Image (cartoon, rainbow, N blue to C red; front, side, top):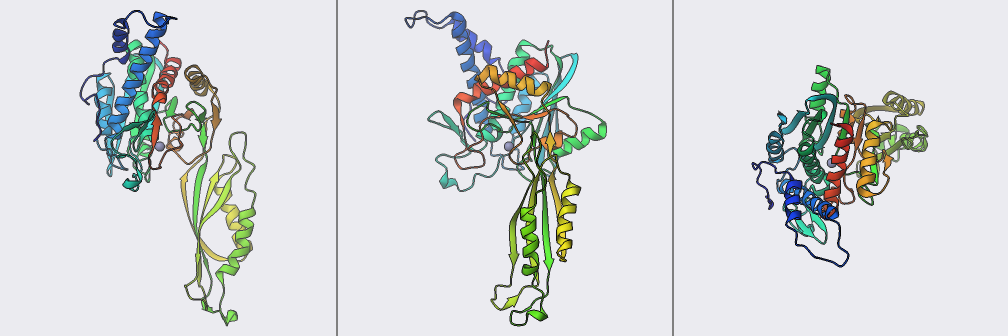
Length: 427
Ligand SMILES: [Zn+2]
């Protein structure tokens, strides 16, 4: 478990109150060009905000929450949320822990949800890490540890943003919700999808959802994901007849049969994409045939393939086109299809405007909207929420050894979430 400065059960004090007290005690005098009292207050407050996010990020990294083990992350958050007046419900299934927490500001308005995951991918070879992946370690302006970027810092930043927001605006319009799971990095069958299924059964909807996945590339604030491509996989078996290579007339070579169909599928133009998505792609990930002997024509060929598809194509359409090609080439075959996720898309609107404005105010840059990358839990939430956006820190180190987050990004990340709450849940 990592070192952390704030015990779980301690009620959260408002980091800004603490910061103001420090500001008032700041020694007089100073540099030749004296900064205004207001600017000192701001920088001290920014520092307190950053320290609060860092302390919670460190505490979360210290909990070894490899999928589906939550390792106490959600209990830590629950304690702080309960202190703020959130109603917290743990929904556990098959070793996965999900937390659904809500708090109403007491006035009518939209439901804003922050969604995320407390689980992390395994660290991989420990000796490849420069420090223990489950002990948050600062080095040269970065904080290292598994989950530092994906996505314990986002969760910590949203927690602190919520504390600051409620400290100043406890009677806001609408409701804040947090939807956390410990099964995002794994099969994702007992996590967010379970809670979404329940919401669907109960006819409940979410108005705005921000998923705290690490979406930025070069710097904090450069990218919001407003959708994700769908992922459709197939396991193809092409049947042939095994035989001696010297007697091909008595065999049927599935490699020879599949080769022209493969060539056609690989060159196929599935769609042109659209304003938000690149064209759909089809890739073979595994191709196996052969007995290992040089004189045997194999009886079967196995090929695994995957579509990353846009909203310009449908699952049925893609499946039909694959079958059409294979049938036309006269193959004897079977395909086991599996859908990892439908694509989702949120057109620019109220949520993207609020997030973009918050980023611009905090980071001084205008974010771009993107739909690249793998699948996320946004694909489930989109079923009950028409405005789902993903925003979090830079993702260059995620799932790698020496995963890290820039320390200077922690405060601004909380600031972005805070400004988004200000805009969507006014007093
Ligand atoms: Zn993630």
